[in-house]
Image (cartoon, rainbow, N blue to C red; front, side):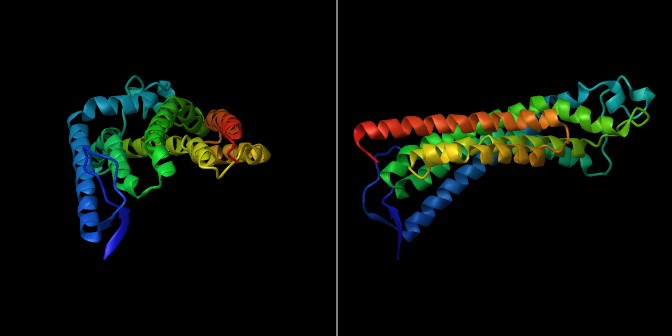
Length: 270
């Protein structure tokens, strides 16, 4: 029994050949790639546990930048920046979440490369041409989205915590805060991937400039709806800060589609 992937070249290697790869070798290759991904993730977690304190200081900075009235549990804590733990395992899970952030940063490039090495021999030449750039740019865009959310977060926290009024102050749980932060970072990171998908579809000929122009209004509306869902706040400024990059990237997709159409027209490709 054989798999449909072409014969795989070694890691130093050459372009894959045109034969078929036995299923057993295919599974061995998959196991090797998974082991390397696991090693990268474990190494990232180990590093995250080792540098837990500075990482958490960075993650808590948006909360500490709030005015004391929004983050203090009482007058005695008004000049301090403290988060609370409400159960015995809370400290462990808090450190685990901080380590997970480091693990994602460290392991993501390795995992993306291993995925690319595994699937590339089974792709057509046109797909193989875009596989590695797609993975690299997706990593960059996700990181940009996460960083962007980090700088938007203080505004979101200020709005959300101010809803209770002046007579109520926040007793913020450390795990709840970190969970909220990760939710924001992942949401923004995923949202920043949307333009890459559009551009990839354009380069593969699935979408064209006319279709993107026709759906522009729908796309802008969808960007603001997605921003309202992803950002857990009713603050219109935060929602707009989320939606505007998506709209700008959509316009970039339209520009890329226009350039692709001109290039194909020059070489006589429809």
